[in-house]
Amino acid sequence: MNRSTRLAVASFRSRFLLGFLACAGLIGFALYTQLREVDPLEPCPLCIFQRIAFAALGVVFLLGGLHAPAGALGRRIYGVLAMLAGIVGLLIAGNHVRLQHLPPDQVPACGPGLDYMLEAMPISGVIRKVMTGSGECANVDWTFLGLSMPTWSLVWFVLLTGWACYAAFRRS
Picture 1 (cartoon, helix red, strand yellow):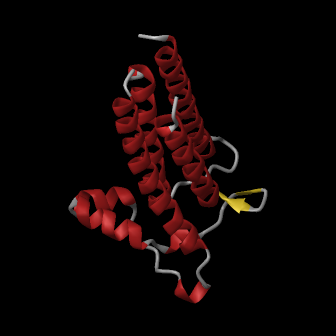
Picture 2 (tube, helix red, strand yellow):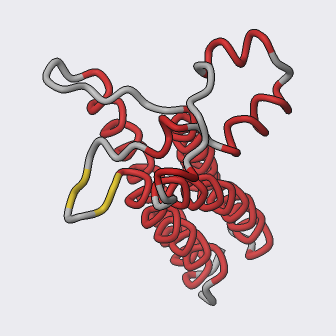
Picture 3 (cartoon, helix red, strand yellow):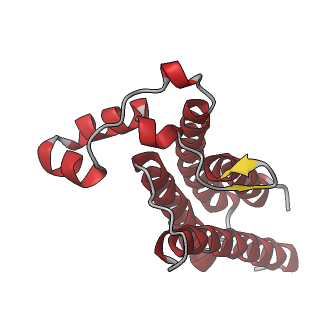
């Protein structure tokens, strides 16, 4: 392996491992807000789906960082997988932000909890029901710098998807 290939592998590895740490930190913060003793936040179904998307993106970042393929094709495959996970997260978070900005009379009625839906419905029905949203998903329980948690998730999905593309598709 020549010097430029070793540098490309090292930079890909460090960038993907940094992406994994960002995803782990975001999931850790979400769990902290849910499990803290003072004023805990109960996640709605869309919040849980966003956590799953961050976890999937984090797994791709971790696997890509640990594997760190020497060839451009291998790095691009990890980049495409990360883009797919990031785009799914973007769609979920974008839908959540849309629900939070609906006029009050257009907010869907609250539905059953995610646990009940998983027991009573097939997974395709659960996904369809969650993505149409419910009244609880439209609530804004937390803001930072004027942005709700789903809006911050949307920002992070954009940043992390862009980061994955930069790491995987940049010319060495």
